[in-house]
Image 1 (cartoon, helix red, strand yellow):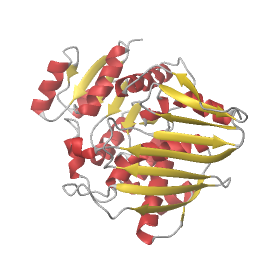
Image 2: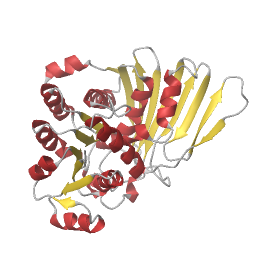
Image 3: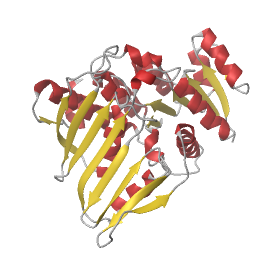
Length: 343
């Protein structure tokens, strides 16, 4: 069966998703309301078909990739779910919890329409191996977990200028969701409470959002995970640094480095493990391959990609982080049942 993938949005992220699907031999149709951007996209990818409307693109597709800014996720996601299309939504699920709940409830009502969140860092070259090592007991019981997401937003790539319109804590959702999701995924435990502070020192005066966040996630088993999120880190490339410590060893990795390191109790130094370099396009290709295979019945699940339940839990935690920033106190994380009953 030859699949057709619809890419909704012809910006930078849309180009990554298109490249990933084209590399898999998938037919690609693109919908972009901006005529000039749509034309430029087709000039870049001559093999794609341009749809004249959102509805046309969705109807042509076996799989839909939602690659527009998060403020537009709700409308498009609801259309895809209504038309029973397997859908990949770029993170975050939405820019606020109320809209995320609407998407979650629509998926739940549809019952068998698969929707996943495109947190592609989970399929970075080393991350599945580290996750398996952690949860096979290779480094013993988890004792400490640190993740980050750092980005130099003053040097935005072309096609990402919409980020300049964000306000307040929006960078926490748009970029920081990577670091928070990785922390929650590696811990594999419900978050019971959070602490968070945001730096008041600013170095990016031309931007509206908060720049630097220090977050602690307390899990139900007592583990504390730490997350650093920064929009103003002058690094050669954005990404996440991860350190995982257990009673018998540790792992550390940066999502864009061509190796990860491990340490076992009794050794004298970190051991380096080379891996294939896979930049954003190839991690998205891996994600698309996993989902395509699931849609075609070639695999029974789409792990390690997050499903809609993971997506809404991430939104609940980020909403609680916002409350902790505002209150300056430790805030309990409500259960999913409590959230669903409140909207």
